Amino acid sequence: MSQTRGYGAPEPPPGAPGYAPGTAGGVPPAEQKAATSSLGDLVGDVAADLSTLMRQELELAKAELRESATRAGKGAGMYGGAGVAGHFVLLFLSLALWWALGNYVVGLGWSAVIVAVLWGIVAAVLAARAKKEMQAVKGLPRTAETVKRIPESLKPSEEPR
Image (cartoon, rainbow, N blue to C red; front, top):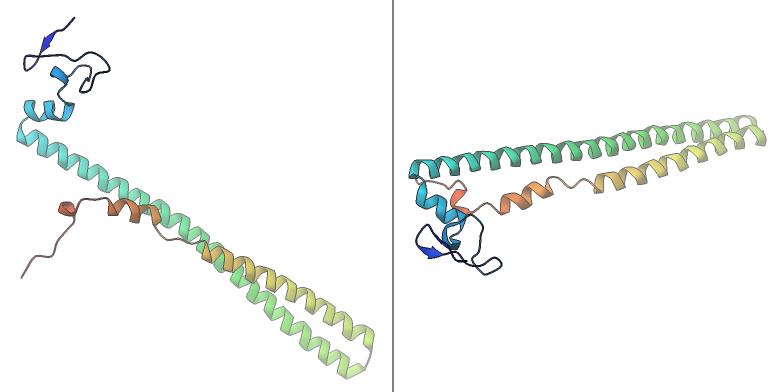
């Protein structure tokens, strides 16, 4: 059963190339809209689409910045913890050397060295974790990728003065 629609062309059978339900003779919806809409409506649609695109890009950038800032904050906190732990290393090593040299008592001096070594291990672990967190900060990868897809004609250009 072939019906005549729109431009007088028969509708292709379902599954055939060019078949789109509800379109005139298999004409794509974009062409149909262009044929039935005014230039002002089309320009308005383009402006609305561009506005939506820019809002979405801005939201994506904000989300990526929040994620990057969170990771950077964690890394900075771990570097701070490593600094505090390193300070304790120096403190306990100094106390251990002082105590050992001052009293020549092996037990008390070596116990301070053991505490200092434990703080050294903590500092090393925190520094390694901080380095890993800081390397995981990627900036705005998805925003950069989607901005690359914006056609050249829509990007701002420098105008001669």
